[in-house]
Image 1 (cartoon, helix red, strand yellow):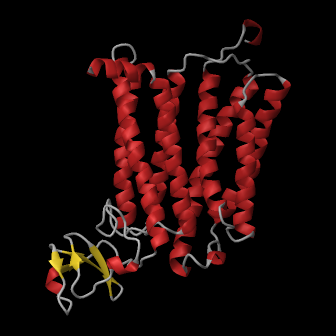
Image 2 (tube, rainbow, N blue to C red; image 1 turned 120 degrees about the vertical axis):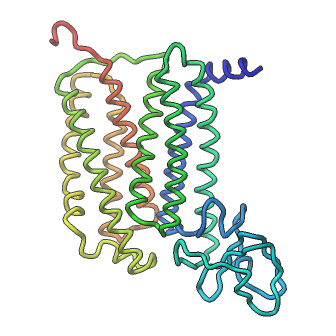
Length: 352
C-alpha cells in the first residue's frame, strides 16, 4: 500500500511540485500583508499565540481578572507587561506574582485582535505549506535511483522550510529585528529557486526556443542586477522598519525620513534594470526567440516601479508595500526560470 501511494505521488510529482511552489508564494503574500498592516507582533510568542493554539479574539481573554481560570503557558497583559502562567490556576482577588513569570524575550505588550489574527493566518499558511512539502519529499523518493538530485533537493527544501520556521520564531523573539526579517525573506527566495529547478527538471514537455547570444548575455546581466536590487531593497526595508519602530506604524509619512545612500541607489538602479529588461523584450520580439516569460517580467518590473514610486511619493498607500514585495518575489522566480530555459538552448551551426 505504501509503494502504491509513493507511486501515485511520483506520477503526480510535477503537479505536487507546482502546488508546493504556489504554497510558498502564498506565504510570501501572507507575510506581505502582515508587514503592510504592521501585524508582525500580533502574537508575542511562537508557535502559540498568547499561549493559545487558537488566538484570542478579545482583550478580555488576555487580561488578568479575579476568579478567572488560566492554563499553564497562557500569556496575559498586566500594567503593559507580559506575564506567563506557571501552572493551571484560578486567580484570587489579588494578583499573585508567584503564579506568573515575566515574559523576557521582548517587551512588546500590546493586543490588537486584527493584528493577532493576521499574523495567525500567516503562520497557518506556513503550517499547511509544511504538510505539502512532506508530500513533495515522499514523492521524490521514487526518483532516488534514476535522479538523486530531485530527491536531495526536495529534502533540502523541506529542511529550509524548517529553518524558516525557526527564523519566524526568531523574528518574534527579537521583536521584528530587521536583519532577521531580511534573512527570512532571502531563504524564502532560495526555496523558490529550488522548487523552480525541480519543476523544470521534471517537466515532460520542453518548449523550443531560438538561440541569441546577446539575449543570453543580457539575461545573465538582468539576473545579476535583480539580485543587487533585492539586496539593496532589503537594506531599505531595514531602514523603514527602524523608522516604524521609532515613530510608530500610524506615522507612515516618516518611514523614509532622511534616507541613506542605499535608498537612492535602490531607486536610481531601477533605471538600469528597466533598460536591460526592455532590451530582452526587444530582442525577444524582433528575433522571435519564443520566450513568453519576458512579457511577464517586463510587466512585473513596471508594477515594481509604480508601487515603489507610490510608496515614496504617496506615503505608502494601502496594498502597495504588499504588492511590491510579492511582485519582487515572483519576478525573481520568473527570471530564474527563464535562465533555466535559456541554458538548454544551444546555438545552431550558423550561429556559432
